[in-house]
Length: 122
Image (cartoon, rainbow, N blue to C red; front, side, top):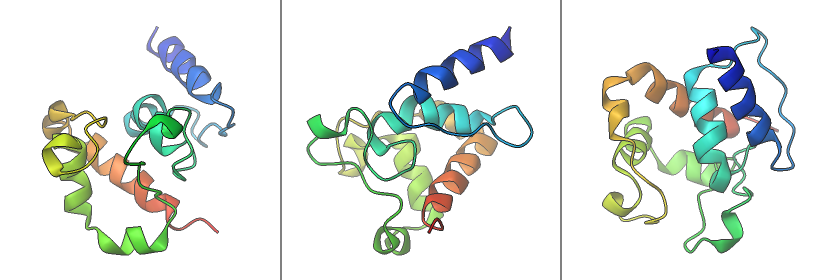
C-alpha cells in the first residue's frame, strides 16, 4: 500500500512538466518524496526555482543550482529554515515550517543532501 502511495505522489510531482528518473534502488527516500511533493512546487524538481507555483511568489524561492547561494548558507541554516519555515526565518511566508522533522533527522539530512546536490550539477 505504501509503495502505491509513493508511486502516486511521484507521478503527481512528475506531472508538473519535468521528468525525473526513479532512483537506482527503485524506492525513493522519504526526503525525495517530501521534496517532490512539497518543495518542488516552488523550488522546482531540478532545484532551479522553476516550480509550477513559482511565478505567483514574491519573494521568489531560492535557486538551489546557484553556486553563490550554495556558498552563502550552511547545512544547519538550511535545516533551520526547513523546520521553522520561511515566515519565522525572515523569508517567504509562503514556505511552511516542518516542525515534525525535528524528530526525523534522517529526512532532514536527506533534504539537505538533495539541496546540496543541485549545486553540484553541471
